[in-house]
Image (cartoon, rainbow, N blue to C red; front, side, top):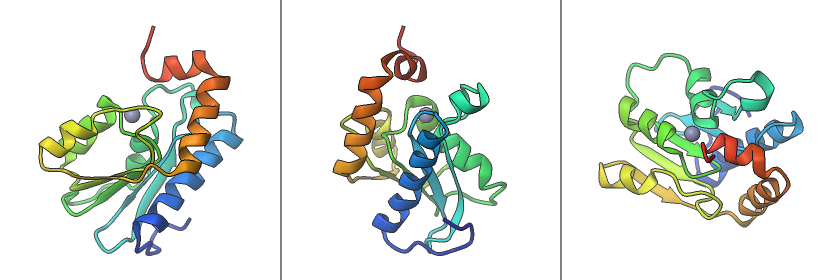
Length: 154
Ligand SMILES: [Zn+2]
């Protein structure tokens, strides 16, 4: 994945997020990836959940992609692509900065604020990619305590 390169289709965009998720897993982290694109498909930034790697509960996949995208003048025409349904925190980021569209790779393993986003004018596309669902399911099964920590369940 290369910043500045164009990823035209949703499948190509989701592949960038999936590569980030796998990179996170390879680092021993939680396998959730995300990427922010301009309206023409230019990759602005990508990232993955860094709770384990950085000891940072604030670095979810979406916030890490947002961080790596640097400053943008407007987010209205940008697309946030994430391997897993955005949690309330990341859904709040989408609303706060007016990101216009969200593509969700998997909302079976976890359902965050995507319906709330859609109700508030964000275009939400759910892919439910079987490979991503299987990857997340396996992680949750193998690391239940880490997963519950990430989603804020006691
Ligand atoms: Zn989140």
